[in-house]
Length: 263
Image (cartoon, rainbow, N blue to C red; front, side):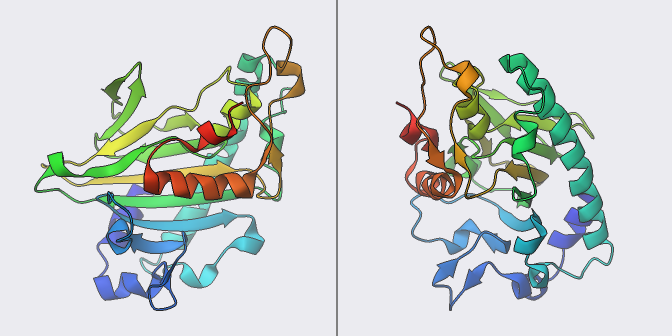
């Protein structure tokens, strides 16, 4: 997966721009396919990266015309990688349900039904001449059930007790991150960590992130069995599509989208 990702970013710029995520004469932005935050001049702080985003599931939402045809093996490798990540996500969410104390092991995993949306994001963080001036990705938490990350270099940091900590890079290892949806459904027993990517002045960084999100029309709220007199409800109900819009706004202005659903 990492090899075809590197080859994809090595394509000539004119080839990559065939799949641009800017439409309508650069007046409209969509998440899918190729782009750079450098194109989003309305954002006060820009992320130092190039990126491709692809919808994997649901199939009805997939924009196949925005999938590159080069390198030749890219589509097949991406499909197989996403499928393996989907299997891993299912297993992780079953174990997370046990940790949260849910009686039904598949309570969380079943949220990833046939209407759930899976994205895969491919990221290239170029070597930065002034890494102290920019971020690879600004601080945020993921608006997902689960995110699975593969990276080839350091740069990811997680916030804990007001301090930023480097996430070690182990060759071939995956980082699994719980998203905001799990925090809400667990009524805060499990938390979605704030994280960022710092720019690197010595080498480029490539990463592949699989984002597992629930049906946009599904309303997300704490599991009833995790709400009690001793632990009252901490989050209000919110439709996932509304939450994802709030997430995009929060990325632009700073802050956490999940704060908007806290009671």
